[in-house]
Image (cartoon, rainbow, N blue to C red; front, side, top):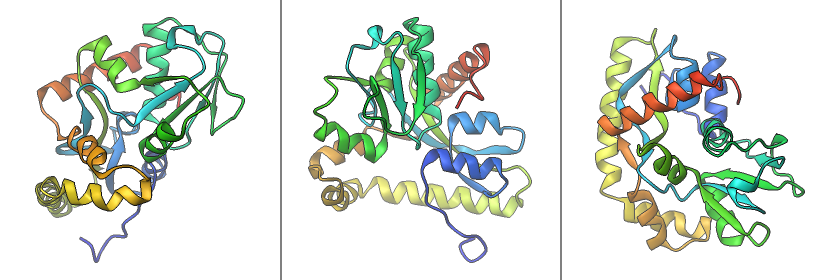
Length: 235
């Protein structure tokens, strides 16, 4: 497939935008975007990214505890779609907190800041501005007692059957290979992220990349809540 299709490397929210615009044949789609585009995309086996408990890189940094953010201005990274919706569920439905605004991008004057991925890992170590740190995946675990699924591998339904099979086989091979070299991956990422390799290795090993029944239950619960509160388009 490599000689027929161009590879792209971008943040989760941008992948969702490309998929919606018809510019993407397959990819690791944020869960919210996959649910929104389920009429035109189908999942590839049960590949995805999930965690049971703490994610360590899906973090809300705030000046006050979570329950005290009523009327707060919350800055939300441009990179996320799924965890922006998760944040709203946790604040508005679990804790009955109503912020005054969710603003995309980083705003120094904001009362709280939602970051994901490398951005969150870096900021966590450098943060001197926000005294409170909340792991949203752990909050979901405490609330629903289910894993949280951030993204699923999906492909357009109109893709050729041979392309679907080739990508599935490629994912199986890549997962098997990379699972065995997590320590090397962590060492390579240590310097760019400015974090200890041992810490990164433990972080990467904590994620689930092939989903099973508990993760599927987590997807179903998230979808039911998103549908119930009409948050699917509230990105």
